[in-house]
Length: 385
Image (cartoon, rainbow, N blue to C red; front, side):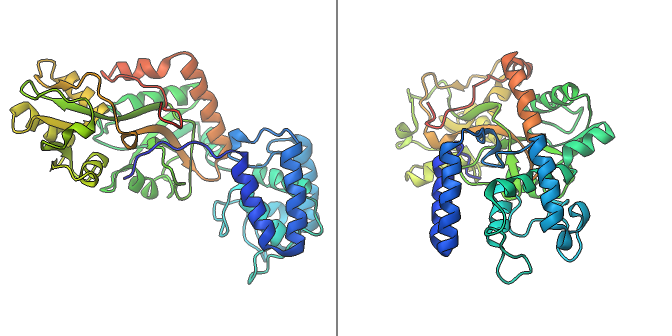
């Protein structure tokens, strides 16, 4: 799993996408592109928090207008309130051409060749299309709506991943955070333990995507989108740490590992970074085993996730190994951590972002992590500084 920090894409990215689409869609596309560019360049709309979703999202007047426009142009195929007829159901999570607001916008404007979905860009103004999409979002009964109806927020987490999460009890700072979030939303919690040999990203597809839970704790932020998943704002940053025993000579960064063999977890990002640099490393089944080898003196140094080193020290206060002071991490060994929700659950994501913002202001995340002996690091900025 490649764990890296990814910044949000700014307005320039969206403008670039629109320009490319306009240039490839013929004269009509160029005309619509120009109008859309004018909209985004001249109108101060708050789209950053929505990952460039609808600028009219949640606008009551737009929703009312969108309702009327939908029943004028769309209901003949998609049925009353979008429940499906000749065309597909628009109230579920199945979107063949992408379910993000910008995907739906493109489908309405240009249609989808080879399908009954025609192009409406010549008949419906861009802001009216956004109104239709704003209305459609009110008909989608997603995870937040269902959780409030049941009074229960279903949480996915990895089992046996202390200090973050553990199936027994349950425990871990991610579990404590999930309990705090649910409490502030007025909900109880239940858990689905998502185990996968491919780590968190593999577990996502077997749990959250399959609707076994409403949200997934502890998802590493990736440079590329995760299929059918969107992420909240990150709630902490983490990375790898360099560990040495008492016999090891001074070392402060990965570049100084060239002349020694380093203990690493098997198939980890730390192992990949060292192998790419041509350095010698010995993989172990887990971070615990790698640290045990350094403790016993079989190897002098180990490169392991910082959270797992903290947990080691929490449970072994007499340990003779310790993190290297002044260690300078390779940027590829730093990443942020967020909560994952399904792609169309924008309302749940924004609700979670609001709760996470409150928790950050109250310093609750550092407090919860400290209860498990873990040092808190604020989310890394895009330049990892």
